[in-house]
Each structure stands twice: as structure tokens, then as C-alpha cells.
Image 1 (cartoon, rainbow, N blue to C red):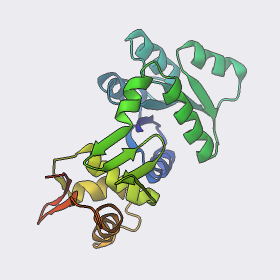
Image 2 (cartoon, rainbow, N blue to C red):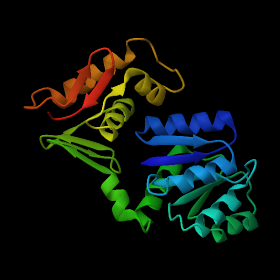
Image 3 (cartoon, rainbow, N blue to C red):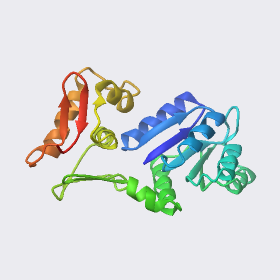
Image 4 (cartoon, one colour):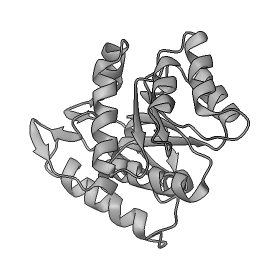
Length: 229
């Protein structure tokens, strides 16, 4: 999924973003209500879901949610709140939120609720199309978190899937080494100079080895691209 995360606590935002990206999702972050509103409005056809904190500076999450619905943005919205009062939850749902989670929560519940929101979305057919990528005999199913090549299911780690998915979202375009490192290793964890080369090697062994057409190409001195010819 391509997600917009609106959270003003930098520590929590980094944690949520890292965990979601490790699960293979693409995450963009905003850190106040006004920025979140503008990003969600501009990306109404891009994001599969918005994860929206309630207590935000400049504009609170309930106001953001209400204004997005008034602007006819139908992207599913999941509210995050530290407020456990029934009236706060009701206010968020009445403003147009599709679901809510009370902090703290396990990552598994967040992922399950996001999957459910995308399935229930009025734009589900669009989200389903965006959730499936096909190139030559390579198939990436983002919603199921599965990868197939020549009708063979390939097991990837979360980080391998994230690298492959980033290349797929930019298929036939060159993604620089710096862009990959900044997106996949944004927290600088394990970001040694050769870590990307290692992951590309793993992916080639799993995706291209034995295939008639190699898909993961090196653009020397620049980065990598995913293309069939």
C-alpha cells in the first residue's frame, strides 16, 4: 500500500514509518494537520489510506478528516488517538473517518485494519489495480505481499520486498542508489556502504536466476532499474 502518515511526534512517526516500510509498504509522512491535509488533498488518487493522528498542531485530525470529506476525498482514513473517551471516537467517525486505533497498539492490528479499510474502500477496484504489478513473468501482489516469477512463488524478506517494490513503482526509470538508501534505509539502520549491493544480489538470485529475461538492471555509476528490454 501507498500510505500517508500524519503524526507530529517525530519518534513515533519514525517508528511507524520504519515498521510499515519493513512490511513492504510505501509511506510518506507529514508532521502537522495543515501539511497532512494538503498532502492528502493533492494525493487523493495516489494514497491507498491515510493514517491520521488526532492531536496535531495547526489543525487537529478530526478537522482534517472533516475537511477532506468536504473536498470529496474518498481515501480511507484511520485515526490514531490517545483519547479513550467514547465522544472523541464518535466525533472522529462522524467527521468521516473509517476506523480508529487507540494508542498504544500492536503493529499487527494496524496492518490488519489498513488491509480491511482498503478492501472496503469505494475505490477498491483502483486500489486493487495499484496493488498488482506485472512485468514480463514477474508478478508483485502488494496486498497479499507475494511475489511470483514464471508462476513460481518467491519468498522475500520484508526489506527485499521493499527494494523490489520501489523499483517496480519506478519501472523503466532509473532509481539512484541515494534514492533507494534514503527510502528503504531512512533510519540509517544497517546502511553500510555495500548493503544495497548485497540486497540487489539477493533479489537477482531470487528473481532473475534461471529466467529468460533478466529484469533487475544496473545503470553503472547511477543506480538500478527494473525493465524487460
